[in-house]
Amino acid sequence: MTTNNLITFAEALWQSGIVPALLILAIGWVSERFTRNKRLTALLDIAEHAVNWAQVTFDGGQTQKAQAIKMITDYLMKADKAHLFTAKQIDEAIEWAVKEMKGQK
Image 1 (cartoon, one colour):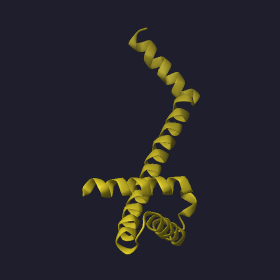
Image 2 (cartoon, rainbow, N blue to C red):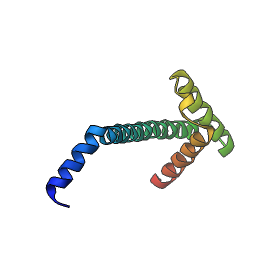
Image 3 (cartoon, rainbow, N blue to C red):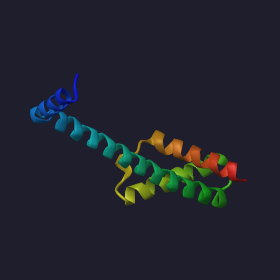
Image 4 (cartoon, rainbow, N blue to C red):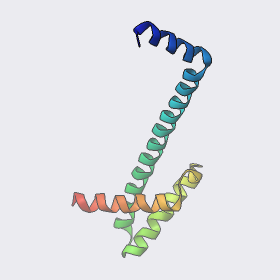
């Protein structure tokens, strides 16, 4: 296939609307991926603060975890972001924050 044939083929795909549709889908997918990553990064930051606070304020692992969960969910409810995260994601964020805290000491 020559360069002229490739150019003609690309122009035909562009004019048919296939390439623009694929570009729109790709942009949407990339945008959603970055947005999801930003939300998860924010959740991990909140979890880290909540775990540190619970560690200092409460005794006992289960009490600390329950208070960290309460603090995170309260914050997310006030920020109207609670619908963005599942209970499993919040629990995993807390577990990650605990591991990070233990790794720093």
